[in-house]
Image (cartoon, rainbow, N blue to C red; front, side):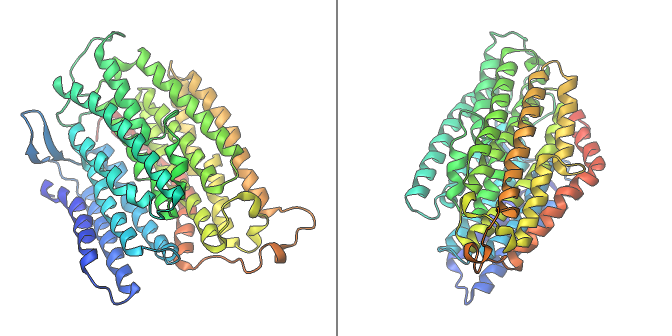
Length: 489
């Protein structure tokens, strides 16, 4: 397949989004068909590119001899591209029913669709400069989605998101310019593109990498740069599902992998203060996020803090700087996306049907919304790590990698503490939904409460099943991820 086709996943959603304001849809059904067709077409193109992987690099233009804007699909790019190609259509179907209860649907879906193209560009970026450009454009296209309601809370969340993103971009820019000045602007290559450099704690490259790690870590909600993520929960649920599971936060993790494994040399970073400092931040984030999730009664915020913790599971695997650690990170990256998207979908279904946001208002809600509650229980059990779910396989691989790494002992402790806290904050939801307490009057508390329509329930069922199918058939995926970590793909 020609490498020129790599531009299609960026162009198709962009053109569709630009056309939407000028097309007069006679009915909402026609508008939804146009949106669904655009998203599904783009997903099909991405999947075709994955199955018939172009071997070359598409260079669109050059800023200098070693600085180009280029697209390429390698093994790591396939992982991220597959996630967005599979999850974006499901989110779109879910969003049709959800947004029918909201205002500004056409504007919402315009930004929603164009963001698909931008995130596709992140997956297909051939070098750090291209990744950085798409990464920053993603901030601009997701900001209107975060601020969709345009009330006080939404504007506050948007300002916080923008300020954090600008801070992260500034730090990444320092790392980018420093790396490019030493030859790091070339095509991504496992093991790094900077050549051999001294393993010296005073080396400026360590500082540059650490600044880049923090900069990309802002989007990955690393502590203490995490507060934008819970605030962004005020956005419509289709947005929070993508923000917290695929588009933004996973783009941050994906960028950290690129920076650490494909620009800087893992061998040169190993054993340095920069690695230990980054691991310490990841471990603190793992425990902090789980603790905050346990003490937060707002359901979407609880899941947001859970995301903060779970993202640092993935980052920890990356920072072990071993192929086993990278494999574990990729396994958990895919599994977490499936589980967490569905948990947010369940929270959104409850909000859509009942307007309730806090757990203390959801006692016995499983009696009125059994299908939604069942999907939440299945995805919650997977997140807790029940075998043979996606959560179990990711945590198992990360635990094995951490045990085999000299720098992974603190990570094992953090993972164990977080595992206990995860069970507590997930099972407390189950108890509220299913066991409301003695003398609970369901008819009075939940009169008229029922499950949403098929457009929302179908994605819930597919993703709930996917959380366990991912674990049951994880061996081929683990082998694939291991080939990426070994540099075979």
